Length: 125
Length: 109
Image (cartoon, rainbow over all chains, first blue to last red; front, side, top):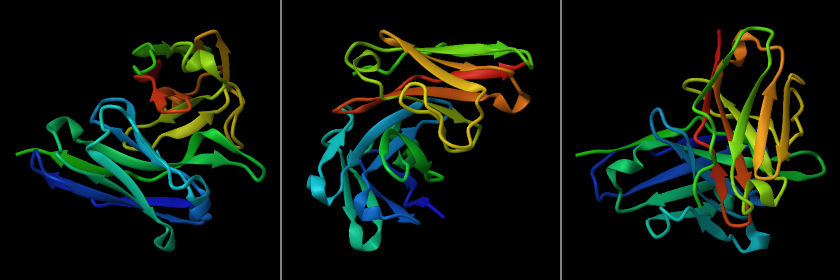
């Protein structure tokens, strides 16, 4: 079964740091870009950023509001992607999802069909 | 880049059709055909319903259809059913980022 499982969420104080993990199974992780998307309670989806695969030099991209504070990395030997967050603010409180683009047997599309269950991050004193 | 603009809510009776709009700019929605739509039920992860403006993944009902005109994309759900009640998000994939709409709450009356 194709699956993404996030972990590492929790309660952190403003200004603190947290590192989330996204464990993949059921597909060739090393061939796949991984994106992170967050959702504050009762709010909409917000793209955080993505990391591409080795042929693309593990290139990363981030939403403007998170650039400089969030870092996405990956360990293909562990089939795991990470989201390192520093200088956290109360407004970073959200469920964080990792996701992968929709791929058929012949093509990959610019849409996401594999999502994890999400991990909750609460930034509060 | 700003989020895409969707109506906050729409409603319809079972069997009816509804359309949800998603307005962006020529730099996102109007600039390519990488518009997708997601359905999200409470407490669940989003589910892909439409990709590339109007294509449906295998397993998604043909009651769901998508289109685009200029900088506005649309999702139409025909033959409304109770289980369609959810929040729907549009998304536009650009060369530098991914944008989402604010979400539209669909109520099936």
